[in-house]
Length: 203
Image 1: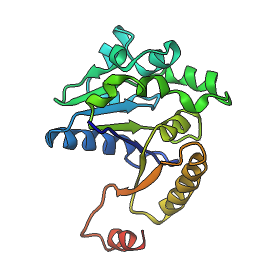
Image 2 (image 1 turned 90 degrees about the horizontal axis):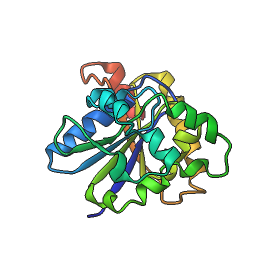
Image 3 (image 1 turned 120 degrees about the vertical axis):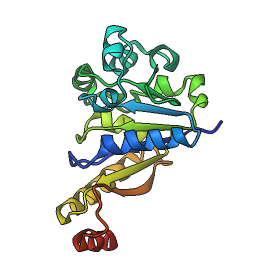
Image 4 (image 1 turned 180 degrees about the vertical axis):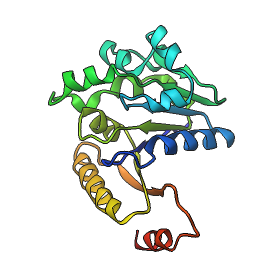
């Protein structure tokens, strides 16, 4: 099975990154695809949406532990309440990883051991949720991906965020030449709004 890895990212917060990840994961699962969600946001919102936060913490099966202990995918991936969707849970412990690895020569390799696991081939698609910060978590998410996708609101002031994100990802292509922009998701789009329609055209 060929696995596609997609990072959902925007350096502007509150634009619907997690909502996009959750809905894409559920949609792909409904299509019969096997999906892995990687929650690289220390807030762990995607983990909460999928209902595995308590289980991840009580069993110590979450992304921060996997990174610090160099664990395999099989050791930490959890099934979610959505059939066909597993998750690498995000917790506040990712902040410790962030502080420890920032500036480290290997800061782009946080997901390397996990994605080298043979069981990654069991998934059709991997969706990586991120937070809006130019740190080792986002760098690793983009380094490990084949594609990135930018969610944004249909508002003029968010256009600059797209340019900033593309510029940042462009720098990462020196480490990962295969990284490609898949496109943008306009969230909270209203076809009846003339402003939203004009924004879509400009975008």
